[in-house]
Amino acid sequence: MAMNVRFPDELDAKLEAIARARHTSKHAVIIEAATRFVNTESKTDRVLAIADEISDRYAETIKRLEDA
Picture 1 (tube, rainbow, N blue to C red):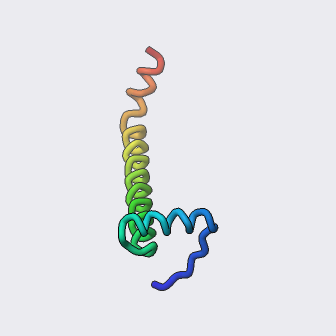
Picture 2 (tube, rainbow, N blue to C red):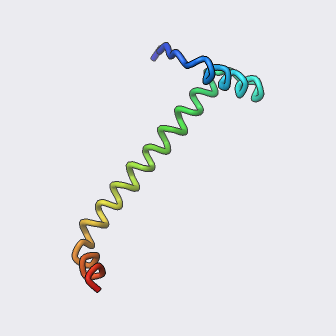
Picture 3 (cartoon, rainbow, N blue to C red):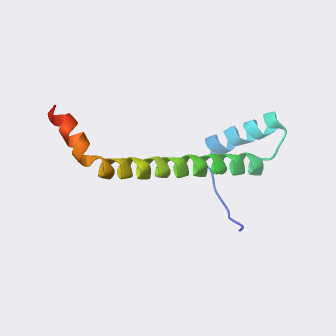
C-alpha cells in the first residue's frame, strides 16, 4: 500500500545518514524500523496477555503471598 510520510527535517537527515552508511535507501531503513517496532509491540502485547493470564490463574496464591 502506498503511503506518503513527512518527517521532521532532523529525523529525515538522520534517516538519510543511516541509509547512506548502510548503502541502502531510506525506504529500506524505514521498513526495517517499522518491522522492528511492530515485532516489539507484538511481543509486549503477548507478554502482557500472559501476565494477565498468570494473574488470573494464580490470584489466590498471589493474595496469600501478599498476606504472608
